[in-house]
Length: 159
Image 1 (cartoon, rainbow, N blue to C red):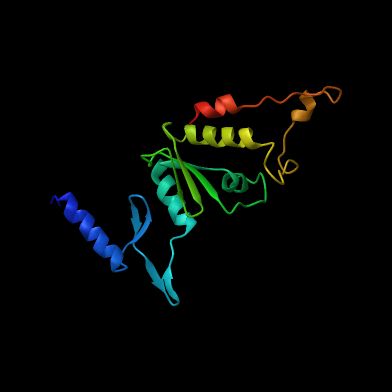
Image 2 (image 1 turned 90 degrees about the vertical axis):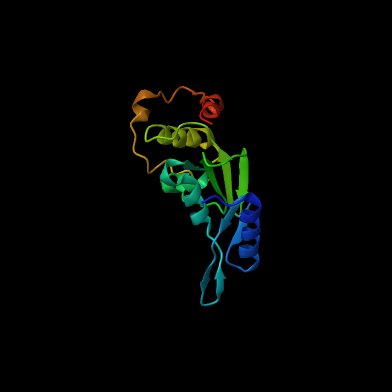
């Protein structure tokens, strides 16, 4: 059944006024839940799950670094790349969502995560280098001063 656009928006407006729907961001509403102490606001996790669910997005930034065990630091803000945006970026509460045009598959998601980590490795606070087992030292000379390249050019192509 098709509903005229004007009727749809008027119904949405009435639902919002009645407290049955809450306007979260442009074009995005949610049904509020009520607890013992009143309305329970939508959580950052629910917003993130909406944008990355079913392979539609990928978590980046400090939440990713913490999830991968690279740092113990947590950020108040959450960064996400998602295919579900019509605009380039959107900020909803503590969640920053950026549009990504790359096909997100089981192969591309780890690459995007890795590029994000490599791009930010020198800025990650409390980077836990000691708990990551590797044998890199056997290939490097302690007498050399290695220049680590910036990988921003690679990172930009993943967007």
